[in-house]
Image (cartoon, rainbow, N blue to C red; front, side, top):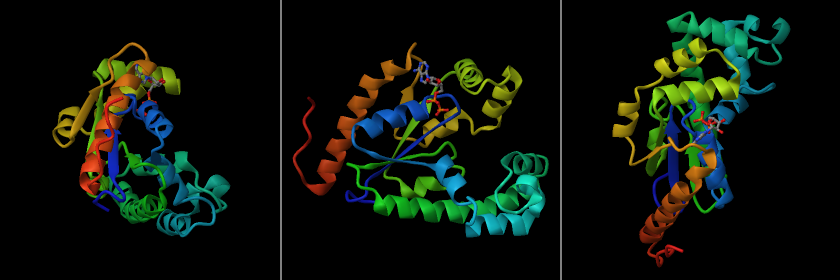
Length: 216
Ligand code: ADP
């Protein structure tokens, strides 16, 4: 995937750090945005071989009303988060399906470049598809507050999600660009992202031997 024709930016960060907000800015600049959570849902949608594989592994009890036609996400989540072996088994099924679908979407992308938004970018090896990685970071309390407000969940749930994720230091160490989304309003991120976007266009122009984009 590497090279200028399909230049891929990986966008990662913990929950509530502003990934979706930033993806929307990239979309408005003409980038194709591929979201790993959306892809993960697609590959086990009704009628897919992915759903059949999951049902074969875990039985119809992880489907809506036990009918085997569509996934009951809550039942599956409860099963895999109470049993490490089941989680590993699910990941073994999901990982190749997600990677194959992502590669397909990357090849079909028509934007100025492609942004792959993936909270589990490093954990799932999506890193190998990217040319550069942008990591969003926030302090833990901000992450918890934003998650509680956005998802209407309790502090305990928000904190436990944050604590189960990869430590922020590790993500930062493995990324090329780091944005601290600690400004008061989401729209304050826009000029910061615009500047990065122009930098990425220059990098792409350098790879393809074109003139730089200019910093207008
Ligand atoms: P993620 O996709 O990383 O989970 P989101 O982009 O959905 O995070 O942001 C979580 C919530 O925090 C959203 O409601 C969003 O509007 C808000 N938010 C994001 N960035 C900021 C910011 N810089 N300042 C204030 N609120 C923000």
